[in-house]
Each structure stands twice: as C-alpha cells, then as structure tokens.
Image (cartoon, rainbow, N blue to C red; front, side):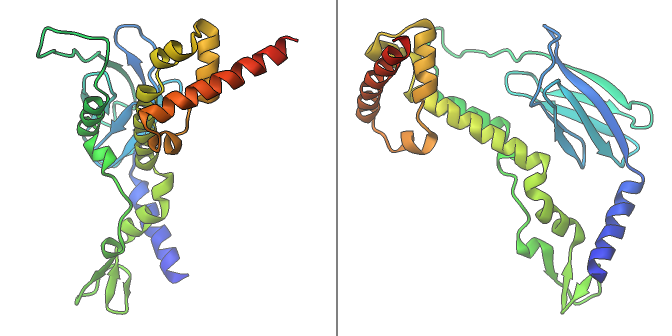
Length: 245
C-alpha cells in the first residue's frame, strides 16, 4: 500500500507542470480531417481521432510536434506550449518517385509491407517494459528500494498501462492494416470476379460475406483459395435465390 501511494505521488508530481496542446489534423489539399495520424512530442504521443482531433501533454517549455501518416510527408512544428495551445496541422501528400518507367496496376504487397515497417519502425518495435527494466539491482538506495533491488516507477507504470497506451493501439492498427492488405492480395476482386462472374454490388456483397480471416488464409495455398471461392459462390447463389422467392 505504501508503494502504491508513493507511485501516485510521483505520478501527480510528473503531471503538475504539464500543459495540454490540442489540435486538428487535416489534408492540406482537400481540407478533410485525417484520423489515425501519429502525433509525438519529446516524451508523449497520441493518435488523431475520427474527426482528426487530438490532445497531447508536455512538460517542456519548448517542444516539437512530429506528425506521421502513411501517404503523407512528415510534419514538423516547433512549439511553445505556453503559447501554442491550439494548432491546426495540414499534411501534404507524399510524392512517390518511381525508379523505372514501367508502371503496372499490380502493387508489390511485400515491398509495401517492408516500406510501411521501415517508415513506422519505432511504432512496430514498441513493447511493454520487461521485468529487468522494472527491477534494477542496486547497491545504493534509489526510488522504492525493496530487497536489494530498485523498482523504477516510470517503467512499472508503463508496464501496467501498456495495453491502454496510444503506442500499443497504434501498433495494433498498423498490424491490422498490414493483415488486411495481405488478405486483399490473395482474395482479390479480380480473382473473385474471374472465378464467379460477379460484378458491382453482387461482387462486393460476396467478398464481404466470404472474406477469409487472417489465420484461415495463411493456411491456404492459391489452389485452396480458388476451391474456397468456387464452393462459396454456390452457397451465395443459393442464398440469393432463396431471398428472392
């Protein structure tokens, strides 16, 4: 109980001088608000909401906002938290330079995935503190000394709150988007249309209803996917026929 109270006191002290910076992230060309943008300061980070809004705290008298979003240029803005409490961030589209003149409609999913992981390397590699980060062997007294080891409060708090942190949530979004691109590359509109003859709303309805889950499609060969589509179209047409009767 004593250690918990001490942790609360430390946490309150860290937040005593913090200031909140609020803002909105928009597309510089269309003016539309952008959700899912990754906003960081020196010691804090957050993600823009559904309407592009965000709020982030800082203890520094001078700081720099960095905003990252796939498909856009990195945005950097030096700020003074005592003055810049509300900011409007406009992102410019990233210009993709091609090394060759031959352009095809097919994207390289593996290359896209590698580029995405390189761009957001820090976010993909984020993880909860390990026990060795929380408990440090020390011969000198430190914060919360216990049985010859020192508990690092900041690492303990980070470990307890990791799955509720913006960093964890953003990493989950990146991984989910990567998985969706993998599914799309194998269960594609072109392949489904070729095997079923469906188009327009019927095609979209079929793909939404029979879209394989990530764990399932990872176990399928290309042949298995074709068999799955052909079996599913029989069910789809049967269900559609019953609905029209």
